Length: 243
Image 1 (cartoon, rainbow, N blue to C red):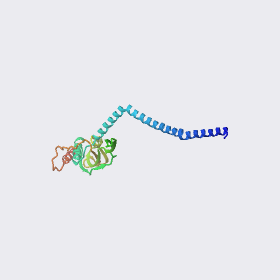
Image 2 (image 1 turned 30 degrees about the horizontal axis):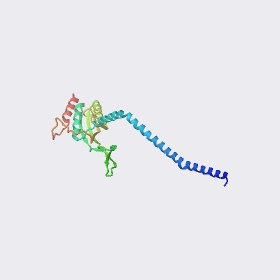
Image 3 (image 1 turned 180 degrees about the horizontal axis):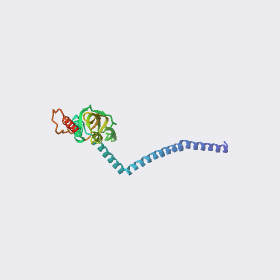
Image 4 (image 1 turned 45 degrees about the vertical axis):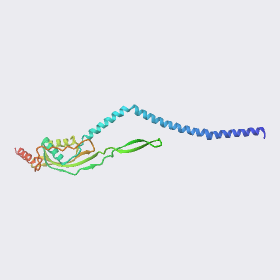
């Protein structure tokens, strides 16, 4: 074999070795490098995010406390339960406060209002196995359920125009959450007052720290036929109109 042929063969072998090194070694290292660069970029994002959380830790604590205070403030607007005696006491106080006369009151069954399901809390538990390894198990536990209830109440009230406006304002601004659903007003020719039919909703929450307190209705004895003292108030109104 000529010397020139040997040189050519050696050159070809060198080229093949270089190509093999590129395809099987360099290219593989390049791919691994790209993977590591991508992983490092992802880790950097996570580190930056964790650093941001650490830098704003106190702000998150303050915001959480503020939000929790607002939640407690909202929860405080709802009683733990609403019963017929609460209706009676509420209307007695309404009569005394606004110089009105409650003629009828009816209370429909209480129903549940569907709300968003409570968030689940994930609890992680670490245990040591027999072979010395650590095993982590996670269990989702639901937060205490808070149920919202609505009790429809319909009342007919005899009052002046100004008193009726005050009654509606009282319902909408009451410490215990209430709302006016419908209102029907007509003129009562016999008394010269307005006869209003108010359909409203009383709301209550269960699953909170609030406890139901049985109301005391002063001046009303068991078995009375006129829990609102309507007869006396009607007689007084008739005397006032006659004058």
